[in-house]
Image (cartoon, rainbow, N blue to C red; front, top):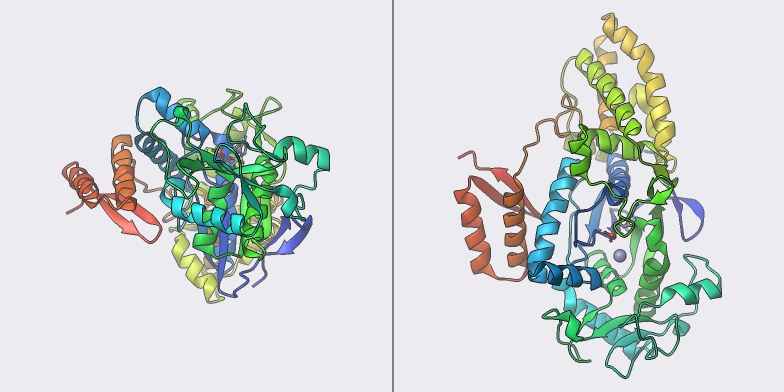
Length: 482
Ligand code: AMP
Ligand code: ZN
């Protein structure tokens, strides 16, 4: 089967995407910082990554998808203190809402979703390796910094000039005071404890403190995917300094290539500016629902624009999405019968028996750098004669079967929510917010090996009529049908 090719930020070239071990395609995505609701710009990024995963899996390749939760940094600490709750309780609430929205948008749950606060020992070990190799140093206040000059290829990913690198790179332990760094572009690995941190500090060989933000993705990526893996993804704003710093600290410690490929998608914009919490120009999924649209229409609209092109958000896009989804649903209904589910198609693909049939040009457009606008153009071109024939009852049984399988492949690649498609969200259950939050707290308690609290929460969920099932990468919540 033909493979996906993707524009790689590191080489600036389109590269074929395949697992380097010949078996599992291992990739890491920077996840949400959980100090408020994720906005639909964040979800553009998670949806593009979901599309990438689906296209790889529908090409017959198994994946291992890791997406972290940033649950300790300046913002999560500051906001939890402002809310007067512990960091753990605060981030559990926002993580639960994130999961609820991601599920409503039909985003596949990653295989592993690690939180930074549960991986302090791995981050400490990475700093120890960097200190031992002469790539890091301690400052007078006990913080530890990465010495950028010790890693010659620094800047290879973002290709900024020296001046720009200097201005942007250096996250400091204390942003108001940069005197303790040897060089302005050095960045912090371990931030020594400050009174403003409250209870949020951990022990380390360098005293109490907390890890720097860049470090967590390196430590967790390498823990779950190996020192060298296939692809690392994030929104374009993360390219520098976050990803540049991830490469430097990982490769300096291991001497190996950290990620073979880098994939960055462009932003969702509002009136010409990036949608962001700090600009206050954001919409959440709840805002979209309040305006009368659903997660299905949002998903369609956010994936309709080319991944590496900025898209401007508007209600007209959602309206257009509604029309196209209705047209697809009507055609599927005319074909008579539900389409196969995602798992069935992936099994067919793995055994080399999945065929896009009349929708092959659509699939091939997706394989060419996830070109969704071209794929949609091909889809409606292919659909027109089939719609006519189906309405006239002129499609033979084998033509209907080919159309059904081919269309299922496209619908699942985009992850569209169409009620007529099995497993595509048409029969999804709404899980109340308090239940999701309780499930999240129970999962966190389990991660902390606090079995008593985990059991208590499981029982409380059961008393409310919900069962929680552990899966390889996390958990699922279902209504108790017993
Ligand atoms: P954060 O929660 O800020 O850590 O961001 C989570 C992800 O959302 C990162 O990959 C960001 O690059 C991405 N992101 C943030 N703002 C936008 C936006 N307006 N459009 C697309 N992606 C975004
Ligand atoms: Zn990251």
